[in-house]
Amino acid sequence: MPEHRSHSGVPIPESDSDLLGQCRVDVFRSGGKGGQHQNVTESGVRLTHLPTGTVVTSRRFRSQHANKRQALVALRGRLTALNTHKKPRIPTRPSRRAQERRLSLKQRHSSKKNLRQNPKVDDD
Image 1 (cartoon, rainbow, N blue to C red):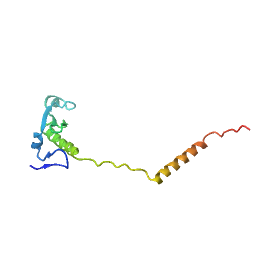
Image 2 (cartoon, one colour):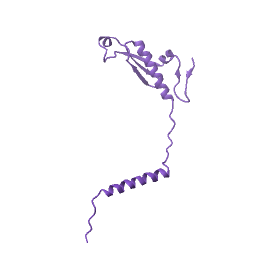
Image 3 (tube, rainbow, N blue to C red):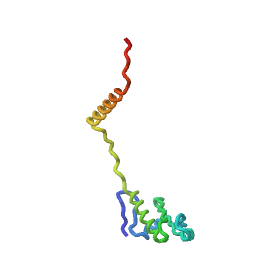
Image 4 (cartoon, helix red, strand yellow):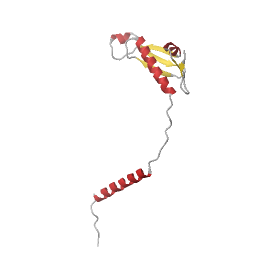
């Protein structure tokens, strides 16, 4: 089967069985709300992607198979997020006009606050 591969990163197999082959699958009791059924059956699924060490768990559904499908979808999302690279941020400076505007606003605010003070008494 062909694999998806970004410019650099981990290849992601297209078929679920190939992706499961790269993972360690653990099942556990979900716990939480759901009563007796969840306390008895091991329906929670934890997938550990061995090449990257990415861990995904799913315990949303009462069925182990549905949780496994959900975990595979989540794992594909995490792997594609690992493969995509963000563009580096290029720092920019504010324009001269923006700096002048900000300084004039600060001066105006300062003069307004100075007017709030009590008048100074001159000793003659």
